[in-house]
Image (cartoon, rainbow, N blue to C red):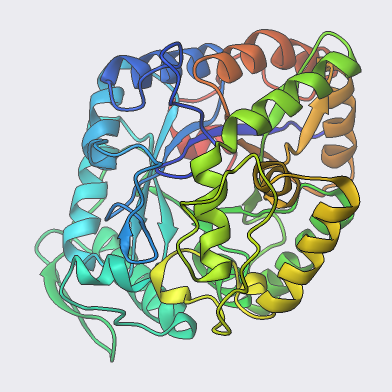
Length: 423
């Protein structure tokens, strides 16, 4: 039976992680990060992934004040965690759209060196204009060109890592230009492990050409199997073996002593994630109007939305939601009327926050065994909802079930992230 690889993704912004109540852990204090990383290491996780944002989000032109702000820079934070841990991989989300290859490659190389070969780079892109304005670029790159720059950027970084310190690396393409000294081997693992998070055709191609590990949003078995087939076909097209890339879908887990308890807990989490103000802000994207005067526990807005489609330059909006909003709103009205749903209750139903796996530890371990046995995934990147609760639950209750089934390591067998992932 193949062994599963596990990571945990501490998101930068968004509603997945609960943080507003006084009894929830701070999302900015170093003690939270240290406790989480050390607990994951006790659970023999491959890596701790830190999300990162380059600007606070906006909603209809104003600061979106419903997310955590004030977290330290990801590489700085992970360098601190390198001193508080011994084995677990430390992966920084870093943007190729609004960074520069020579500078970022040097900083990632530094993290790899101080951690003794445990660093990874989660390669992401951005096309929203409000982030670009923070860098005097405005929108800068069209959505379809993000991955062109990302590919040129990654190729430049890899060249810098493989070149000797006295060697000059030069690139002169339409989206990346540099002339810099090589960085040489940074650590026992050679260079940081490359992670790629993107499900579009451009993202899949970037992963097939350069990534060591790829994230996906496919936790449904059939979709995960189709994704794996597609990625392996792309790997073959680029001359790479089928097992060159580890596939770790992002997955949220809710555990209970019984299936009913797990479902009840999942419902509570979704309710907590979808506060009244957040529900109104979500619908404002589609209505194109200020809805702050409406009661989130009341019926849907009785005013017509604007005709304009959602503006993708103002935030991270999935491709499938960028058109057809009037028909979507009509369907929401029908659903709300049929089930007598308030604004907040409707957003709970239609939001993408449904947990991926809900059940007892044994049930989820059995389900994951099928994924592993069939080669559909190589593991999962956990998206926690509660800290430290979700982490402690998985380490103390789910990991032993996986180990009992021969699905998971019982000890670290190496010291570097590359070794943990069997790359």
